Image (cartoon, rainbow, N blue to C red; front, side, top):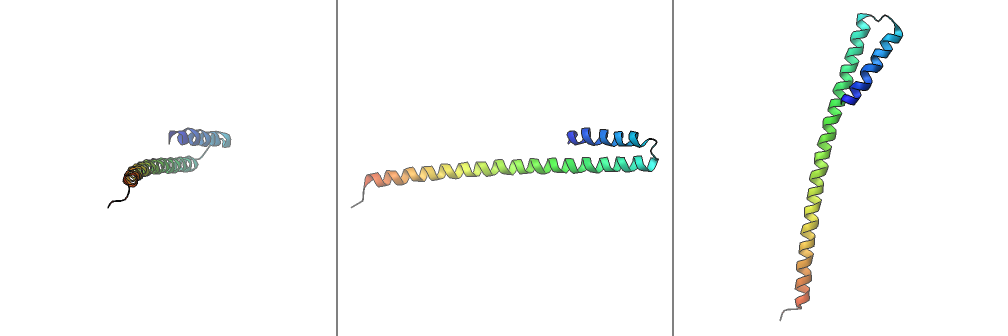
Length: 86
């Protein structure tokens, strides 16, 4: 999120300096644009964190399922090794 601010703010400042004397309205518009970009970046960061958490939970569920299947497979093999019951 701060990476975006480090890029957006200098770019906007450079644009204003290049144009020369900027009106109050154009500075306010640039600030509003920067604020909007920052807000979007923060929301994207939150979404990415949520996705990462969901991925970790999915991995844990998959690991547990793999463990359960392995345990059941061992039980089946142990029963098969005993042979048929009379």
